[in-house]
Image 1 (cartoon, rainbow, N blue to C red):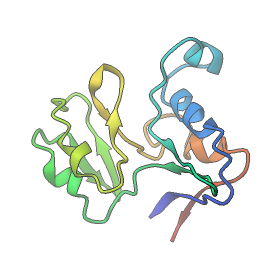
Image 2: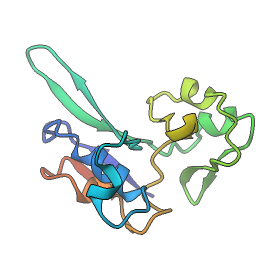
Image 3: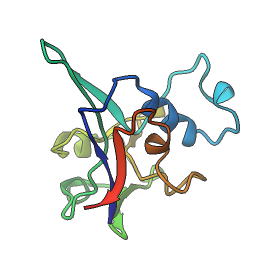
Image 4: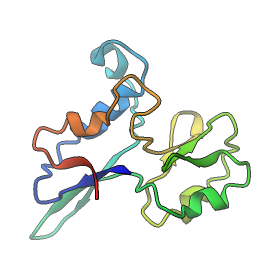
Length: 145
């Protein structure tokens, strides 16, 4: 199954992956209308480790083969379909158990405090992950490994 992989040696820490993700999942036609003066809720997050050798990389769901988040979801909002871990936001009861158990920290609070995570842009019109196509330095790769 194809997944998004980060190559931290090429990540600039520009956060464009976050903006492209938020826009792709906004159901808007224009990025300026979708994001200007609004709090964004990307399903991918740029992490930064400071110090002498500063490292930045994008963190998104790994779509684990045996996802503990799905097993821990008490409302049945998380499921795995064709290798992709997905969230039914109508079923989410905002208990945040999935956030606590995810070993990668890939699940976050979205708008209205409902959890969200990368679903590989399968539910929007992109066809492939918007974070990957919007990365100016090719630090994100969408491939099967």
